[in-house]
Amino acid sequence: MKYAYQIEQWTGRLEWGDKYFGGTNNYIKIVGLVFVIISLLYLFGAFQLIVSPLGQFFGTGE
Image (cartoon, rainbow, N blue to C red; front, side, top):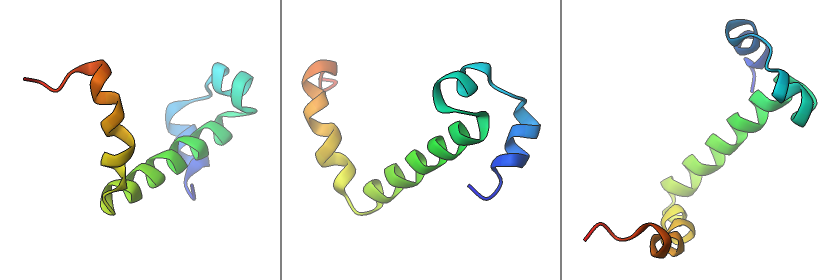
């Protein structure tokens, strides 16, 4: 989140990010926050609890 401006300079402006999220910087910060939350859920084992109900839609791989 600290480097949202630098990431925007690297990627360029995203028109759909401006349209739907109020700006490219906002979009980059939201994506970063989602990654942090998913990482913490995975770290503490809660990610499996959230994702496991989706297995019925995608199969178990057997």
